[in-house]
Image (tube, rainbow, N blue to C red; front, side, top):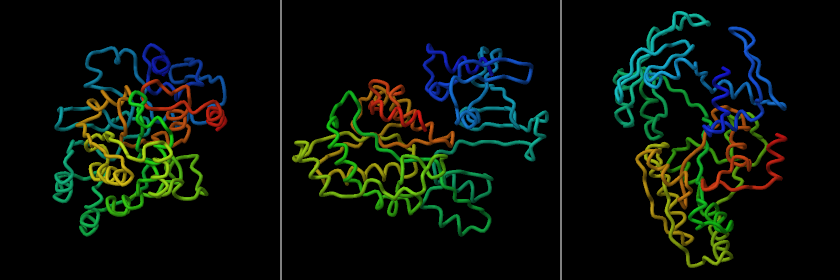
Length: 337
C-alpha cells in the first residue's frame, strides 16, 4: 500500500490519477495488515477512491511478467491469457471473504456487436455488457435471456477547441455549437431512448448529483446559435474537424454524423475523422490539436469530486489538452465541495 501511494504521488511519474490523492501526505505501515493514511485536510471521497485502485506489490511489480501474469488478493486469481482470444480466472480458495460460487470465469474479447449478441443467444456466453440499443427488443423477446437496464455513470461530451488550433477560441462560437445540437433527437432516433437529457455534467448515479436541477441546461436553439455566430464575426461559417474513436461508444458513428449535420445548419462544415483506437487518437488529442472530439467521461469513483477536479480545477489544467483554466472562483467552489 505504501509503495503504491508513493508511486502515484511521485511527480516524476506524472500519474494521471495523482489528483485523486492530493490530500494524502503520509502512509505509515503499522503492522503486517494495517496501514495509516494521513491527510493534510478533510478527504471525503477517499473511501470511494480507494475502491477503484489496485495495490501494487513492489517485488512482483519489478518483475518482467507482472504485466502479463498479474497477482492480486481478489476472489479470483489469474490463470491464463491468450492475447486477443481469452482471459481465464480461477477461484481464489484463500480469499478472505470465502471462495466465490463460480470456479472459473473466462473472458472473451468480441468487439463486433452482432457476433457478441449471436454468441449470447446461442449460449456460448453467459453474460455480456453494453447491448446495442437496436438489439434490445430482440433480446427482450428471447425467453432464455434475462436483461437488466441500469443507468450508467457515463456522460457524452463534445470537447470543443483544442488549445493549439484556436478555432473556437471565442467562447461565443463554442456556445453556438452547443445551441445547434439537437440532443433530444439524438436520444430518440439514434439511442432508442436509452439516454437522458443532461441536468448536470455528472450522471444521476454519481454522489453529489442534484436531482432538483431542471433538465437540459442548454436548449436546442438554431436561431440563437446563428446569432452567436454573427456576433463572433463568423456568420459566413467555417470548416472544422470532428474526431471520434471507432467503437468507443454505442452508435458513436451515427452520433458524430448527427452532430456534424446539426452544425452544418449554422455554417460549421465538419470533416469527420475516425481513429481506430485511443493510442492513435492520442497523437492529436493530448497535444490539443483538435477542433472537436466526441467522447465521454465516466465517474468510476461514483463521487463528483473526481470529474470536477480532473476537468475543471486549474491545478489539473495542462497546457495543450484543450482544458481551460476557469479561474480561482471555480477552484474555490470545487475545493469547498
